[in-house]
Structures are given as structure tokens and as C-alpha cells.
Image 1 (cartoon, rainbow, N blue to C red):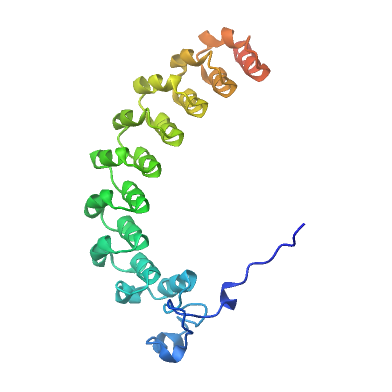
Image 2 (cartoon, rainbow, N blue to C red; image 1 turned 180 degrees about the vertical axis):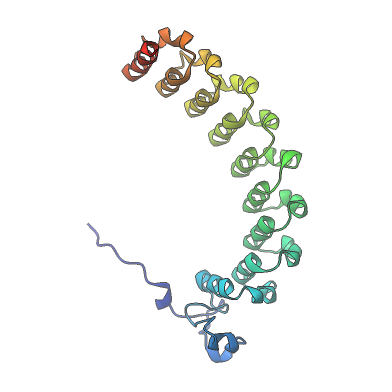
Length: 255
């Protein structure tokens, strides 16, 4: 058995700038805030290449973030964008680095990020999907990346989700099954994946579950036995899987 090796503390790692050069406080334009204890070489430093140290700097010096929105190191721009005034972020929608554009998409007003639905980076489109509402999300339901479709499906109008009922990705269809209106959800009771049918069984009204009583997957039938209208329980009391039959008998025996 190999021994566990403790992770090296962040403060034990040499202070280097984004181009790999050693850092010195003497070369820094922020000597004034260093004297106030608001930056610390190797721990809290905007010139460092390590994300944690840059983030600590802006957390303690948010008023300085605006100065760094055009810094050549993308980590600095992305972290500065988290703290700078939202009124300064519009130019970052076209930043060459996806990490920066993700922050812009997350912070700018929803109306200002609508055109970012077609960004080349899926992470940016996911951030956009998490901001938009209503019909603005419809285009993202057909996105080529399934994670974007998931993000859009979680917020799109339920009636629009019929477009994803037959999505090739199981995870997308599971999200759809959680949000579809009852009339459309009934149509997913024959989905090819039992994990989707389990979600259908969990969300259909009890009097709509009859088509799933004979489902080939025991997990689906167990959920059905727990929720179905009692009128349909007798068939489940004879189920070949004892836990399914037992829950059906218990429910029938309950007053």
C-alpha cells in the first residue's frame, strides 16, 4: 500500500509571475497596500501566476480590479472580472480566453449576453443558458454539446422540452422527464433507458402510471408500486421481485 503524500501548501511554492520569472516586492506598483497588509508575496499577489494568490488579492483589493481587465495573463483578467464593476465587463464578451468570457456571461445583465449563445466554447454557452429565460433558451436546446442542452433544459419553458424527448443523451432526457407537463411525459414511459423511465415513474401522476406496471426494469416497477393509484396495485402484488410485490401488498393492506 502506498503512503499518502500530503499536498504541498500553496505558501510553500515559489512566487513566480505568469511568465515564470521570480517575483520581488521591490518591482511591484502596490507597495502602499503591501504596507497596509493587503498583499503578501507568495500568498496574496496579483503578479503571481497561481490562481489562488491572484484571487486572494482581488478579494482584499476589489477596488483595484478595474485596472487589470486587460492584463496579458488570462487568469488575472478572469479573476479581476469577478470583482470589477459590471459596467466595465462588456468588452470581455470578446476576450480570446473562454475563462474570461465565462465570467462575463455570468455577471453581465442577461439581455447583454444573449448573443453569446453562439460562443465557440461550451462552457460559455452553459453560463449563458444559466442566465437566459423563456424563448431565448430555445436555440440552446439544439446545441451540439449535451451539457449545454442540459443547462438549457433546466430553465427552458416546460412546453418547449418536447424537442428533447428523444435526445440521444440519457442525461438530457432525464432532465426533460423531470420538467415535462403530464400529457407529454406520458409519452416518455416507453423510453429505451430504464434510468429515464425511473424519472418518468417518479413524476407522472399516480393515475397515469398504469403503462409502467409491467416495465421490464425492477427499479421502475418499484417506484410504480410506491406511487401508483391503488386501483392498479393487485398486478404488482404478484411481481417476480419480492421488494416490489411487498410494497404493493403493504399499500393494499393500508387503510
